[in-house]
Image 1 (cartoon, rainbow, N blue to C red):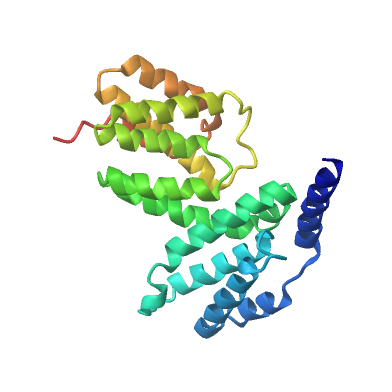
Image 2 (cartoon, rainbow, N blue to C red):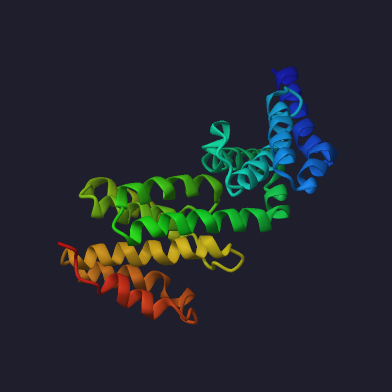
Length: 252
């Protein structure tokens, strides 16, 4: 048993050290080239690293793959091989973050915070566009994807609860809200959160409060909003969004 523990400890340390020291200069060069063809090559080369035993748990290739796929997704290409490039980017970024937290204490995610924050914002805007237009099922799907690329699940859980409630699945909605409420109790500040994470919390709470109010649960709606209001007092959009989302009449 002692030998097994020693081996596992060595493997864990190896993954961590490898992640910290390997530079992947080939991927860096391909990304810096900035052409559509170089992004395709980047994706293919990064994928090879994700399949090798020595590097498949290193977060860096997954991040590079996500970067390449994102660039392809906004290139306007009609290549069928990359028709799902944006969704694939979400998948690989999520895996990269998962491995980074497990083996590297999230250091690389912090190092790549600019890309992560930007990508999160594009996904938040996609989800919010669906939800604000009444597309709660599609909105739920996008928020579920967002949760894969964020370590802050509170906002997504509130927002997924709101989507389920508006889609007449009140049982599942309450499960998401219960989970979010429990997570919220552990948070003392949202300082340091990405803009998208803050938006997820803000809109998640407001959409949830709106759903509760329109179902004649005004006290619960007020209580929910009160749990986060202190963090958005200086937010110029808070009051306007509260009026638009919480006070708007239910669509017939």
